Length: 276
Length: 255
Image 1 (tube, rainbow over the protein chains, first blue to last red):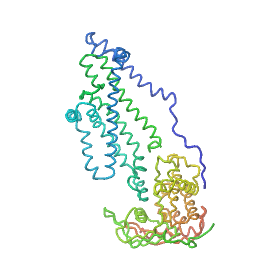
Image 2: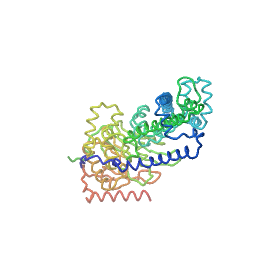
Image 3: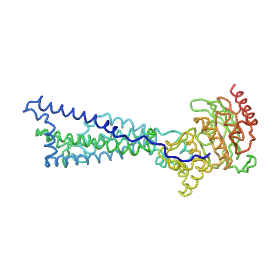
Image 4: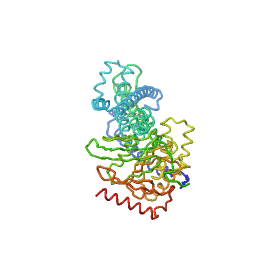
């Protein structure tokens, strides 16, 4: 019997316009409520001389984002922090993938390294931060180290999970062809684990931004990151700018997360088994 | 074209021999005991038996995925095709790329891969589905892809580990006819594991019956019916008689 090809079976329909409204409206309402509370705090609860504790939103916007000189300082700091986060994340990805692949290839590697990978996650890295400054100086490199350490574990854990959840029958299919481990890694293990790997990247992307800002707080040599600006604004009581810098660094984390979510979505269409 | 297995001439590339084979798993379970079985080139042998009688283990030993604890297995040096219980497709590869997978792993050049892929897809009736992803296919179609993939290696020995167990009856019957078509068009040594007596008789030149754990061979039935085999064969008197013969042996073996 011969079957003939028809249209590919229809994939789930794209969200309709109404679906979009349903997705966007609720968070917008929450934002409006939040801004309302913020104004209430500034104008009703705080006396004018204490208003600097919670400056009203429009002041944050006009001082932080509409004044070009201030905005420029913020953006320059943001770019510095972004660079630290990017390099730190890249290092975490390279090291994390290498460690997870090594663990998946040999049980003894996993047995000997995994406890320390977990330890890495449980020890307060903040407590180690002064040590890094002591060893590596108080500049760019130390910031990257902090960043990498904070974002390493999710990559190791997710990649390892992905590599270990490969269908045993698929492993046997490859074993029957007497395929070497590197070839199998390329043709089977990594593509199979890809969605889990990307989930790890996504979590770590957010963490790397946190790591970079923490690094800024401790290591003040070299170009000024946004974390350094924050402590500067605190000491000068420039609360509008402080708020603006907090908003910008949050945005950086969100953008990093979105970037990897988008990547997961695109890749997931083909590689995610659950999206059948 | 009509032929019987005895008319074919083969070299040794496609023979499978088990001599006094035994298998005890690491947990102490005895899966197989004193299995003596020879499958000659050009034979299609189905192995039926109750669940857990070590049928699959026998096949895994033939393929080299598992080793016996006693006795020995001698398998011809020809190419082996193995069809698993599940289709075992790579979900990110299209049908075409899935069918090419084993050739790719063997280093077959690209042009030849494409040729053999098209040939195999045609043989299993899936021409036109090259660009589909596995998730767009039904269970039966996935299994066809899996069979096409094994076919690309031009196997001398074709091992089927209960491949149609999860399919509905209609799909199973259709695929049974296709397996006999493939067998007639491109002969190989076949070993087919199944629970289904009808399926076993329909596909085979010989049916081997195994007892419950520890599994051993309790008897066999020759099926001297010509290939290719039409679906109606199931209502043939000769067919029914063979089915009841196998059924009787199976009952004896498990009592």
